[in-house]
Amino acid sequence: MLWWRKRKSKSVILGAVNLALGAKAGSEMIGRFADSALAELTFLIEDGDKLKALNGMDIYPEDGIITVTRRIMPGRSFIKVNGETVTAALVKKITELLIDIHGQHDHQSLLYKSKHLEILDKYAREETADTKKRLLAAYAEYKAAAAELEKFTLDEEERSRSISFLKYETEEIDNAAVGEGEDEKVEAEYRRIINAQKIAESVDTALKLTCGDGNGGAGESVARAYSALNSAAQYDEELETLLSQLSDIDSLISDFNRELSDYAAGLMFDRGRLEAVEKRLDLINGLKSKYGATIEQINAYREAAQEKLDFYEEYDKNLEQAKSRLEAEENKVRRLCGELSALRKGAAKRLEAVITEALCDLNFEHIKFEICIKEISTLSANGQDEAEFMISLNPGEAPKPLSKVASGGELSRIMLGIKSALAVKDEIGTLIFDEIDTGISGRTAQKVSEKMAVIARAQQVICITHLPQIASMADIHFLIEKNIEGGFTKTSIKRLDEKEITDELARMLGGKEITDIVTQNARQMKALANEIKQK
Image (cartoon, rainbow, N blue to C red):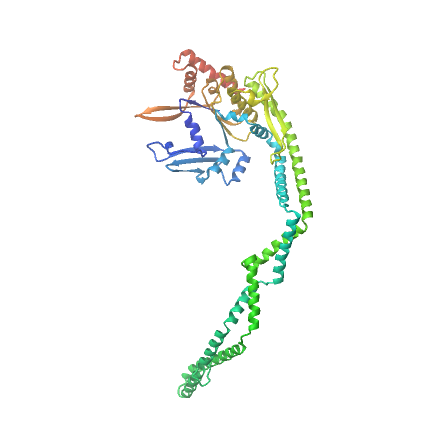
């Protein structure tokens, strides 16, 4: 257990911790003489389950160490985990596994019944884990079945209209029988037909320019060129190669002219075909305007419409199936809720005994503590239970709800008793107590210090306190104080040695005037604390 002796400066500790964990911070945190403020937390993690959970968040501790760094600059800040920038939300998830800060007002959460069930479930975590997992999955199925049943909202008249409309849509698409890619083919044919005259004129012009029909076409010119070159080739063999190339050109032009002539012969304007193509194109475009911009989308729409049609045609049968499914899923959830409730009730009896013993150790001499579990009507993924802590502080009084009995100081001790009861099972490795001593003194303070020492055997405990009885129980002591240097306030943190620990305990016991008797009392108090911790 670590103890922090405060001299109007304890907020620097909790402030730094909360800053590192992502608390809101203004530019005043930086001060007048710096460019930024820095808060850093380092955790050593040795628990395999925690390491596995962190790995699931893509956080991989180096040698089991995680360092959370928060830097604050004017107008902005950032958080890093082991040097990697992360979101504040992720830091919250990470640190919820590792640290629990109990401030001087946090014990007020015990006034809310929802907190009581949370505490019970934390105690019973291991034995309820499997049931809770199965309940979570079953509840998801139950909600899905309920959502499915909500789809059945049509009356007979609405269903009849929906069936008629869906049949019309599916039949319209089926009757059109549009094939894949047909729209592109029809559009191409339509363009060709309506431009047939232009095509014919262009083809005719091309034939005149290339055919050798006595009109000076390209074919005739090439033939003349070949004849002239052929007569010259008998005098120079080098012209044979050129003559061969010209012969190839003549052949290509002849082939081209023949194919183009065949194409021209097949050209004709068929008004009947145009009307047929226009009608088909209008049909396809009409389907596109209703059901989708492409043939694929039209077919997808048809499949969805058919599914709806099948659903409505089998409406009564499907409705009964949906009701049966919901009933089955609800029964499964209720069965698992009952199983979880039984486990909780068994754990509650054991937790009652453990907390009662812890509260007796905290100077509640006539305590009677009970956990009342009631079934509520609402189903949830966390069961069907409501838990409430009941307590009696005086002999002869029946237990009453905690919120109606305990004072602020008593709530603080009760929370400590609960935390000590959970210490062995709690997975959080570090607890910070801020002024857990509110409203207590004397023998009660001594009991509180002993109970905190018990918690410290299983977890790291950091405590900020006014009381020497609690401070003396710590293993390590730090002093935080403010001093004025050069006209400016400076906060310092110092780890205390044995003599300094005694001096600080004496100051807490005796105030400003520290006598030899006070110092001796401080020394004895520390020695007694060491003896208690060794038991």
